[in-house]
Length: 369
Image (cartoon, rainbow, N blue to C red; front, side):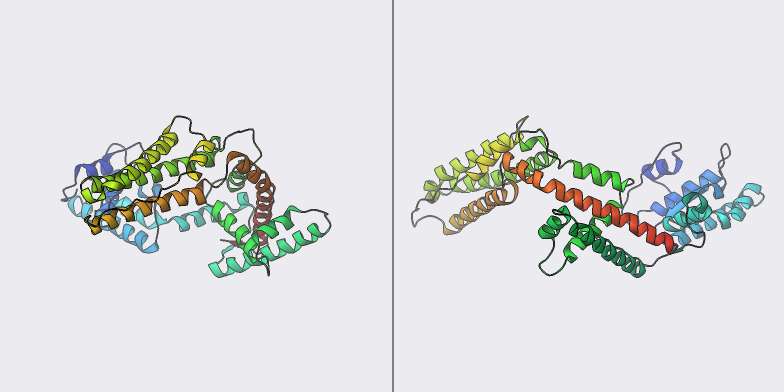
């Protein structure tokens, strides 16, 4: 049906049936042409033909949807020129006007309009623009915080006030409001946002673990440290190679070699089958660097500066691990999580209340966003 010579991968994407396919290629590689050809072959298949209005073709933009419809129409017209007496091709060209070739947003809107009784929404709903949605969210946030202040006043102690103390600015509660809104927006990408949020907060519950490496955070941080240490060790090996080839820097070799060996030992701990957080924490916190000995004036100053720069980079890397990753031992980490859990639980409750109030407001105004 087409004079185009398809590559093996394109041909497979066009002809493969009864499975999920992912076609990934750079711009201009012919993805749209492949999809159009796949659709044409499906609707003209002699053994198992599919009507065009039984297919759902979604794109990201209206322009792309219009282009897709136009390409399919052109392909059908070309096929009719070759086979003008085909009733099936005439039928497909007629059905093309009501085929679901649209943006994903338009498709979802159509599904909602056709099923509004099941969704318990006003049939005269409309889509809020971004500005209107943002203003409504701000209104809901302010009302929520006012009610929280009223509840907190009646209580002798309140996690809400502790949350304000920790995460709000000195003048107002805007930072905490932004945090609530940010968490709400973030979890909307999850099919079960409320469940996901509580699952994440529950990870902070005081647990029976004895070493921080047993937690999900400890495992990920040790992986991060392993990658960082591997890079630092590789830098030290480059410095040692430079020193070995420059006789004037011979006095540096023992210092660099010792530091490289200690990096290797620390890396081995991270790579062990069951690395312990406290062991790595102590090693990182106690990782020191000696003063470099003086070298003779006959050494290559450029090479000297090069190895010293490498060493400074390694020192900065160890300092970052000590100050940003391995900042506390397991006992301190457990205490921190015990302090943080009730605050996160309060934050989660704020997010859920905001979500409920926002949905209620949208329902009152017959809005979708």
